[in-house]
Image (cartoon, rainbow, N blue to C red; front, side):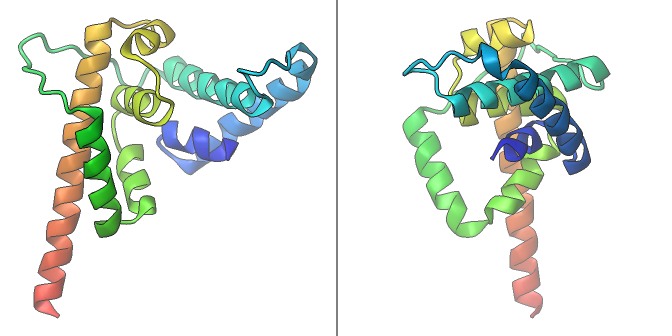
Length: 166
C-alpha cells in the first residue's frame, strides 16, 4: 500500500521504489516518535511520511514548476459530478491504465491531483504543503483533470478504432 502511494506521486516505478525505501528507513528510525492517537493511526502516519518523501523528491529535482494562469477560466466540477464520472469511467478503462495516465502528468499537476483526489486534502492544505497559492492549487487540479480526461478520451477513441477494424 505504501509503495502504491509513492507510485501515484512519482513519474516512474523506479523512482517510487527509491523514495519508498528511503521513507521506510525514516519510518523505522522515527517509530518511537509515533504517538498512538485515535485520529491518527500508524497507517496514516506512515502514509503521510511516504507522501512527504515523494513531494520532497520531486521538489529536489525541480523538473516541473507550478504554473498559474490568471487568464484561465476555471470550471470546477462538484464532488458528486466527480464521483459519478469516475464510477462510469471504471467500467470503460482499467485502474492500471488510469494510474499510467496520472503518472504521465507533469509533477505539479500530479501532486495536486493526488493530494486533492486521493488524500482528500483541501486546497488550503495543499497550498501550505507545497508552498504555493490556493489559486495555483486550484489551477493545477483543473489542468490535471483536463489532461486526464483528454488522455482517457484518446484511449477510448483508440479502442473504438481497433474494434471497428476487427
